[in-house]
Length: 406
Length: 126
Image 1 (spheres, rainbow over the protein chains, first blue to last red):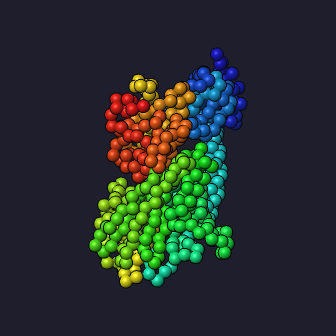
Image 2: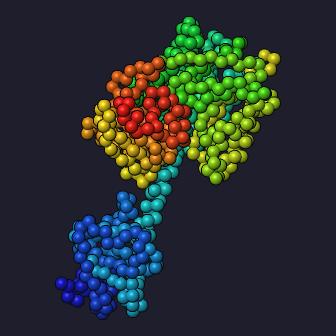
Image 3: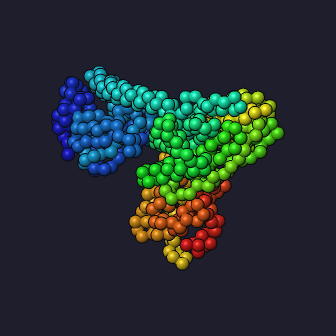
């Protein structure tokens, strides 16, 4: 279908051979084979060994890796030259977008032409350089885009940090300490501890929004804000306002509003959080709490575990018509409350083994004088266990200790 | 279709026809949508009672439970309150392995979803 003269004329219109002398073109034309391929057919498969390169004579092709699209190549372009030159597997697949006509050149024939015709060799190097330049430009653009995204995430991380308490309530008879380590830039875990206005009580919160990343982080800010604002509503209404509600009503209102708001306003996203919310009376040590599908916080003293504050309802945000039961516990002098997220018990070492609740329990008790000393000891053990293993989940702990003799 | 999750759909007949979604693999943040889509497809095709067979699910994260929650919401119009929770009547779970059951229980999903160990018993419960 192509005479030698037609092949030569066609080659002269390609980038690779446009500068090649007539005598050389005759040699190339004699060595190549004309191939036609139907639209949709993949004629170069990634990973295959390749011993042929092609010049596109008519139609155009898509260079890709599965669904990942790299480039379109058109009439006059060369494709498949890399494997032929470096004896390696095809680096991408090539599929005909239209019915196409190709000039196919075998490795051996190409080498012979390159040995004889320095112009061809020069042009092949030229094509490779052009491809490399294109790649470098792509990389630079990708890198720039990645930097921009990283900066945005960093800003997100800084802003999210302001959704955690900047300082914890202080009291002569109590000590509160917390640890928070996000697995990624932004986190789905959260904790809070805040004094109630006009009362010697503190609100304690720990939660874990389902999923990870930016989505979980957005909901973390929502859950935390709703719970904080609702539990201390008078504070935000003004100092002279009093809601005059008892602890039960306060807890119930706070969680009912948070739950209904999320379930009704964001129901379509099916986002929810495990959440433990408690009100602690600093004078009596009485703790009223709701545990919405969260790991049971533990009350212990130097002799061991005294109580697990087991879940009292499913996670928060699932459905709007939930009713919340409030439970009661007491922290006596010398008692410590440890609340944590599953990032602690499910932290993995480099062998992929979990830290486990058993290991956490084995670290309770002891004679730590302060909450922060206890927390420091747990953190040391936990992070030594994780060592260099990659973090897959946020790690959060909240510790409240009632001082001995208080 | 994610390589680490396959979902087969079959029909069982109890007092009512029950559509069984049998998941095989892992359900997490990257593919929970696949489970949700498959359930939506079954519901669009007329399924009103759905059993999610978790026998061959080796891992499910809290993100995976987002799909479970979305299916619950789609199937349960006005669920009856049992105690303090709106209990599901048209969506149930079958045979979650221990690791998966742990996540389900941790987040309290067992408080509103019935979990069965036996297919025949599960189908008969609808």
